[in-house]
View 1 (cartoon, rainbow, N blue to C red):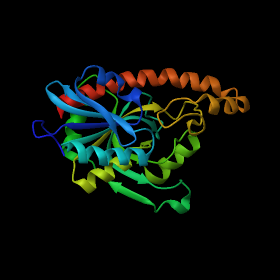
View 2: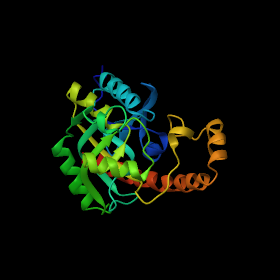
View 3: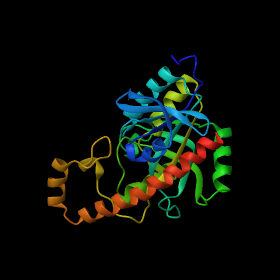
Length: 261
């Protein structure tokens, strides 16, 4: 349980280290350790107590970490943050997505599987507060809409268009559905605020084949993949540098959220 001398913190969960690395640099550290299948840092920023955690990519890892976070730290709110893929043409890389509804999609995306979906509603009051604050700040491209969580990286434009047409989601990612499920079960307020890493115009590598759960490219996976698809190596390089800009945007976004929540 939470230590009595500490207040209830803001819980922040991201899939990979790059999505929270810059934020952690500015936190006054109270403690660090392992949680779920990831890591956490507990500290203070702008007079507020935070628990910042890396879950690893995927719904099950995010869900497991969220359960551990609630049991160990009793956060007053959980924020699912990180990168996502755009599902609409008008949404661009580095735009901010605030989920007003989270769809947790189990299994694949075939038509016959569409009933395996749970819907979760983030905290509307906090959502509005964050949205209004960001719209009035330097984050001019802020979108409020449905986010769909799926258990694998979606990299093909055709699949993204199918997800939009079928579910009317504006963004796709791999963690918020699991976190939202835990938040509902435990009675903890929850929001999902993401930054777009890939729009519908860019070409992407199938990261399900070449990366680990922490988002790192794995040499023994990369070699056979790029030998058969050498032209995609350039796509991977471009995406890597694009992610660095996304991580910088995430840092600014996260600092703003800590201030307003």
